[in-house]
Length: 370
Image 1 (cartoon, rainbow, N blue to C red):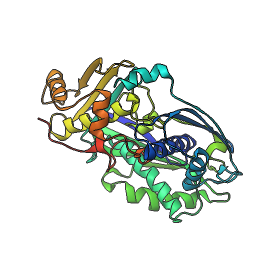
Image 2: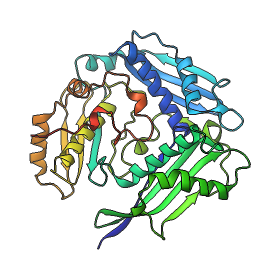
Image 3: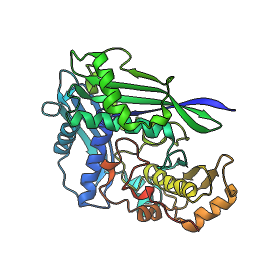
Image 4: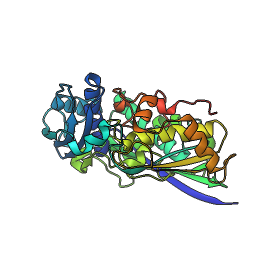
């Protein structure tokens, strides 16, 4: 019997990197609300009580970037520059210009906005067709934010991380070996009480009891203190949580980030499309797990290559699956954008707790494959 441990992590919406992702995606959504053909590539950087926003926007939309930014920081819950950041007093500096005409040449003709490789993945470990470790880690992070914003645990602050280690037997998840939660808190919070509260209010409502046994280890704030957080404790940067955003390291990653990028960027659009295809290969019973890689060249309309791997679980060969993919899906940039209806202000919904395995997103729809 083959046994091994696999660990994935998630972060709360108040993590400094996710703060930056949220600002970038909120700016993108504001542009798309007025101009569905907006070209946007926005990066955000946060340190202490200051935000820097830079990148490219070519759009007819008239938006107030500073107002969008402060509102997003407020929604997340940052209101104290002594411990993290304050939406009312933070400095905001911007350097935004238009998209390079060298890039727009290819995009205007329907080609990819950049070269690169992208991956999509799905497996049958959960009803959402996601690996178990990252799925539970996301739900724990989501629950941390919920109990904070609802005032259930009033001593919690926005910054936090979760980590889940799953034990596998013969590639099937059997139990949870370890749960680790680190969450920012107010001064004078008692660690013992916090551990009891997080077990009762966060872990127990999220984690199925069948995965917990007497040997499951639970760690809460291992250093014993997490008062200074957010951009005061660590810098934040758009696109630095790409493994959290996808499959928790369970699948390969092409390296491209998502947040702040409009759908002409294949880093985002192709990864969403490949998730959709991989999920439907598994959902249609063609494999228990599936990973797809695709490659594009800047300005090129058709993909350069497609690779499918079902890790020995497929009912059809890789060649047969590629033929099914080609028959059912248009993998040109415009084809993917139209199929998934991506020229909509939907991206703030994707920013936190993973871009995959969530309801209400077109790439999560299950269809019948021919």
